[in-house]
Image (cartoon, rainbow, N blue to C red; front, side):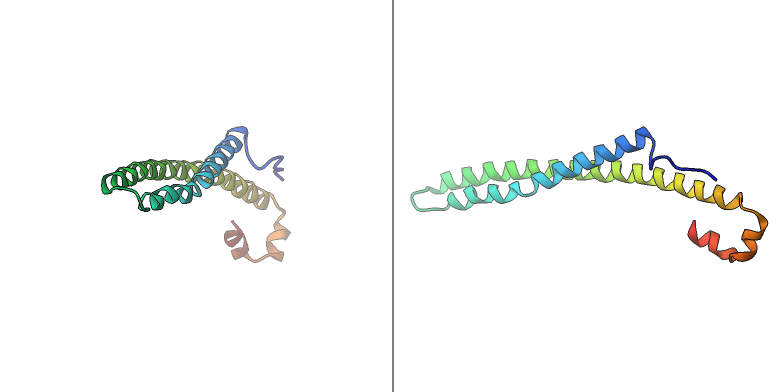
Length: 121
């Protein structure tokens, strides 16, 4: 029977770690949108001219747009790395299970349903 010593090879674990790092970056950037909205609302206060308000809103809109593009890129990278690593690990576990089932004695097949193997894999 094949024994899995770890859930993934070194490259698969690195892929998962990189995905988790991108997930952390994405999660850290998203709350910063709230902090960007405060100065936008403050720019409409008393004593502000229309041009100053528009300049302030335009500046923060650009910053928020850049952050949104950054979140889009980091969330894509998060999804790509985590999906790649998890698919490779899952395929290895499925192959190990199939080889373990196929190496059983013939009496094992008599005790279990023939459809059980396909549904478990």
